[in-house]
Length: 253
Ligand code: BTN
Image 1 (spheres, rainbow, N blue to C red):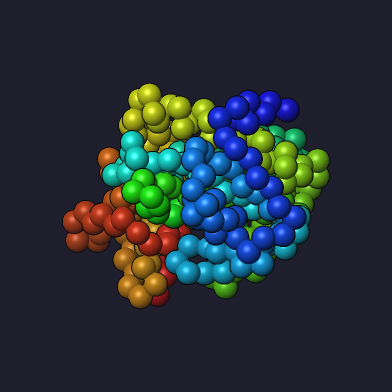
Image 2 (image 1 turned 45 degrees about the vertical axis):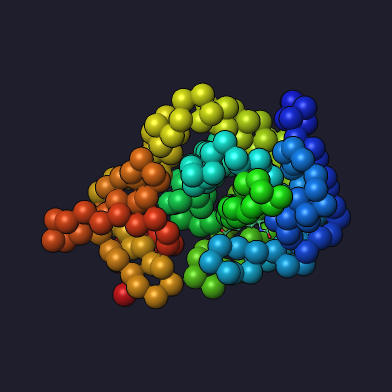
């Protein structure tokens, strides 16, 4: 396996931890410098988006990438799309040998779905420490287990009969793709990342609903803009841009 990423990232790994994202914060509070990758076999307080719990029993991948972000602190949300591309391509790579049908898409902004069920989640946390900006990218991939989520179907590699994949191999594959897309973004900016993301997302014109936890807006998926906001076309013909929320397919009442 190509582990070239180890030349550019310090790597910390734990059997059990509260949350790899929390460990990234502790790394910073200890005054460490540079980029880090942190992984754990199990998390006892795994965090999901919007304050949700991320069930983290042994068998799945739990990892965080800690990046110094001073050079791009006003474009940190781009990294959500960079990471989604890396995780999408990694899952696509390992599912090539899968005998059953694999319909892989990215759901805005960064969920990876197989046959409509969530196989991976990404949690970005932006923090300032010692007067510098940092970005923590938490990634969970369902390898052996598909955890229960109250509002979404989930799926794992094991459910698809993809057997020869361990969390550490998955981490290596993700870091290979992450390094590629992160370099692409550093060289060429958000434009090619946006284009590649759109090629892997749901189809334009599909009916979707975006929920912020209280309000829901349904419309036709049109685009993502140059800042990564989702653009919906409403029944009135108006266009509406949203920067945060959860996407559901179809109309949700
Ligand atoms: C989501 O809700 O979709 C995001 C889930 C992110 C889970 C990962 S697992 C590794 C890292 N540590 C955490 O506590 N959360 C992220």
